[in-house]
Length: 110
Image (cartoon, rainbow, N blue to C red; front, side, top):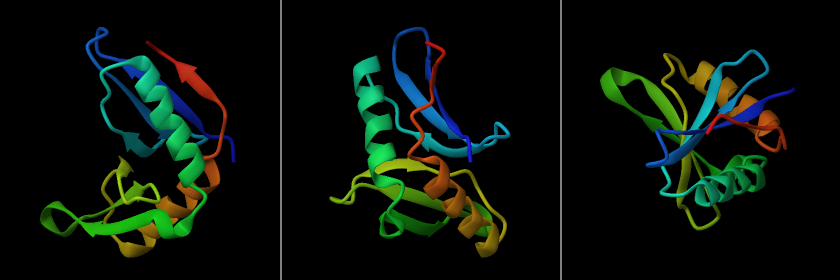
């Protein structure tokens, strides 16, 4: 798979990233960071942790919808998925994040 990270800024006040799949669909949204360097470190953490299935936390969300979090080894949340209607679709989202997360393709839109 050929996913990528989209690094963005809201006018230089904070920075964030999204992991996208090859079709441009959101797989994982990263946290907000006060600096570009910290957002880049967040991407590196996702690249390192995303291949590990045991780092994903399956959760219930608003109105019965499902999400997942990607955590680091210390259980710090690195990013959150979008919402899913079924467990099967959430599990497919995790599988896609495992496959795409290690990519080195970072597209800087700051």
